[in-house]
Image (cartoon, rainbow, N blue to C red; front, top):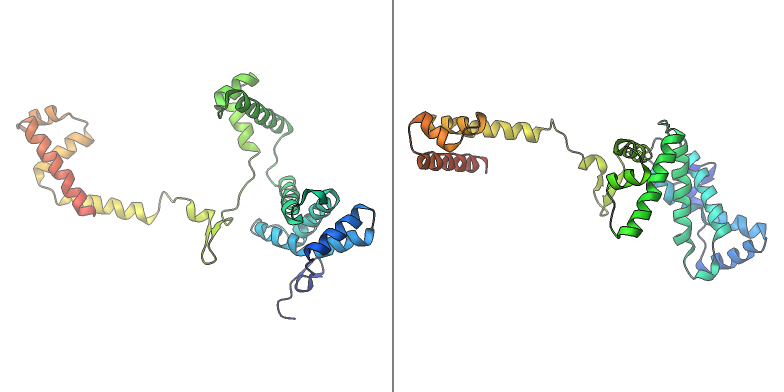
Length: 256
């Protein structure tokens, strides 16, 4: 069948989508102990789970595992959703599913964080929230460390240890066409841009007169003042200033 994708033996192309009234009726029945209604809610919201786990598709995890974990989050959402609040089920269900998947990814992360580091990080987070309430502003790391009677480095290390790793292929923006990934925003210090710019600057300097080269060398490589340069090459400080400014303008023009 065209468009057929199976996850955990479920043909996603045949997944049912519940209507709003049908959803509300099944939620009420489920909360009253109707197991069949609960099963119908689970099956009717599997597309919601599928749409959520697609956001985590670049983590290298088995899609079947993510789907099963997402279903656990869905079941928790069904059991705890308050139908009297007047909001769409997806508004409550999506964060529950995401939270369950993130918990799974964190617990199965190959980078293990010690219990002591986690405890320190959670204390620091609680302290931060407390200080925000007291000072009505974001506290500094030094203030948090002072409140906890800890070294600044220990607090920073603990907070960094619990940050969830992010894939370079995690999408950060999509306008329906090209998708922007985190990797696209990471600079490359050895990229062609810097290399080509360096060549252009060297070429622009080569086009300066010997006197202009000498002045720039003394000023920016040897760290001499304009007065010291003037004394070295036997001209006035005003002439040095004029020649230096002219040389820099020539370089700027070459780089445009």
